[in-house]
Image 1 (cartoon, rainbow, N blue to C red):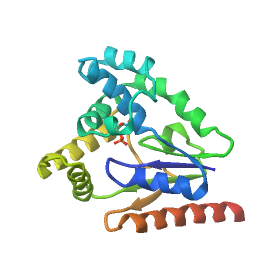
Image 2 (image 1 turned 180 degrees about the horizontal axis):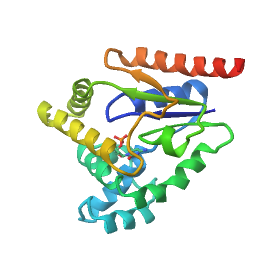
Image 3 (image 1 turned 180 degrees about the vertical axis):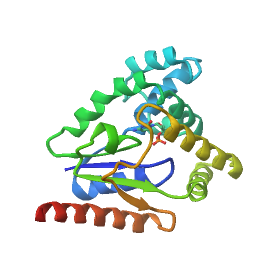
Image 4 (image 1 turned 60 degrees about the vertical axis):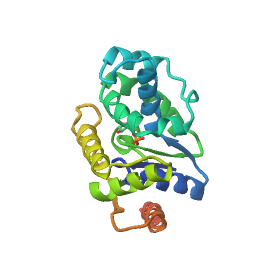
Amino acid sequence: MIIAIDGPAASGKGTISKRLAAHYGLRHLDTGLLYRAVAKAVLDAGRSPDDSAAAMAATFGLDPARYDEAALKTAAVGSAASVVSAFPQVRDALLAFQRDFAAHAAGAVLDGRDIGTVICPDAEVKIFVTATPEVRAGRRAAEYRGQGHDVDDAAVLADIRARDERDTGRAAAPLKQAADAHLLDTTDLDIDAAIRAAIDIVEATRAGRGRG
Ligand code: DC
């Protein structure tokens, strides 16, 4: 079974994907980490994320195991990832790796922005996870505070809105709900309730297919 999870930043899709993968015994790929690794390599090389040549060089030299997750999960790397991911050549170069991961016989959970629309359009289950920008910004701010950072709430909200605009507005594989994806709005849900809702969607989808 392939489960495709898409959604904007801080929607809860990462946590939901990890927990779904554990629940069903599937491997999980956080595809955002690929774009983040490209962005980090560009920044480390002293280049700007909107430098397409630097982004391409970083993509071709990419070693996904090079950085630990903490180094990739910073606000600066997230914003830069949103910029480098708009280059169609970067997306094309990362496509095969993601499809190979999904093609594993046991199935997989992949999360990102274009999993249900581009990477795995035939996934058995597609879930589009969302929440209001204010609630997502609140979660991000709490996460940064938990890491001991000083946080400017207005700046976090502005960053979330800017990322939404870039990720949904780009020409190449923009963030959007696939026509056959289930919408999961986590605005009023805590993480346990969101995971229960996601499992319910998977179970209902499988049962529906079983009957058909
Ligand atoms: O999910 P994330 O916040 O780690 O993703 C960082 C950026 O990477 C996001 O703003 C857009 C880009 N991205 C993408 O374009 N396509 C994906 N499948 C995953 C992430």
